[in-house]
Image 1 (cartoon, helix red, strand yellow):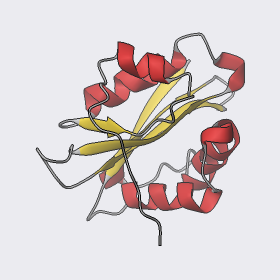
Image 2 (cartoon, one colour):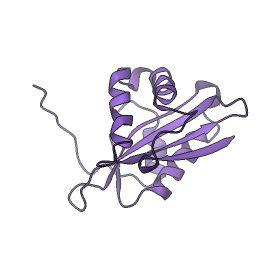
Image 3 (cartoon, one colour):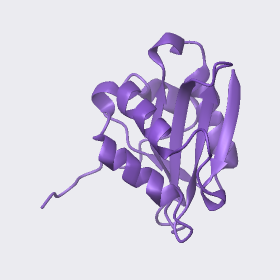
Length: 145
């Protein structure tokens, strides 16, 4: 397995571009995902020089994406974590082999400052996040207009 970190400040990668990453995430996030246009908006945020973030991904020797995570910079500190892990997905063929954990560790090591994430209560990945040191400090509530 090969790993790649794409920094927002350096712009999108020529081969592993926004469209390929969004297609992978849209397919492999399954019931925990968002519409593709929202995933693309998240990637646009990463590659906006005034905002930023990064993409950590894993790919095989055939250059197929096998796992990807997107971390956006929040531009805040202290009262809000500096980073939010927005998406992480692993190809179903490789689940249970530690790839998700490797991607999470890569993201956490690279992030400058604290990292937050949102996870649905029934998502089995919650256990991985807990093992990596994430805690449930708050219950998120949203008001949608």
